[in-house]
Image (cartoon, rainbow, N blue to C red; front, side):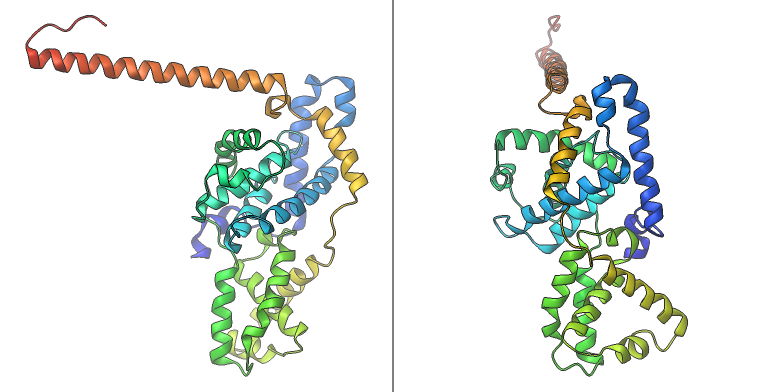
Length: 327
């Protein structure tokens, strides 16, 4: 299914430089659009693409922690789905336009829905520190925006199913006596890969195989023969590409620490000065915009009610054989 998926067609990229180009373009787009609207202090506070990347990395750790401490326990597929959404969103959007702390909870909530992990909005925000009513409003107000920015490509192919397939195949077609002992090492690598761009660069099956080989190496097991002969049938061209992909996947998560807190404090302080106030729930501009949307919804509801009432009155008049009153 993955080769025909929207994930394969639209959200897979050839290398890190392509991802960086998209992020630089998103940063530039915001700066070009908003710089003239901001005062001097806000202009000076604007973040570079590299600073945005640092801030996003910090919030990826925050999202991982939220998912891990979630009650009830969150399935792995939901976590993988949420990280995919978060990374996709910020390929084409600046943190100065949409604050990561607001988008990350929306990503997790949407992933719960898509993966059919049934929690109400009340249950969901019970896992969030701070003003839970405000958090619920932010999630609901951002949900449609998130789906639009994802082009409604909501189905995510995670590496978990390929992992299960490989383990079954290894049990049947390899000399490894107890493949189940690989699970701890597999989960370890997959957890680290959430914090990398692997899901945008490699297929779920490549990530799954890399995690299995990583675990086999940690357990001092050798699956070389299984991979080269059984899995690939001795095809040297396929082997070269696979080895390179596996090497890059495993090396991508060697740096697995969050950015220094002092750096993040400085970036967040600047972000509060230069962010788009129209998307800031604490700003007066945002509150006025939300109030206008509510008024528009109420007006539309009133018009629909009036239309239904007129139609009902006409129907009743026809049944009674009298002329309908003007309404």
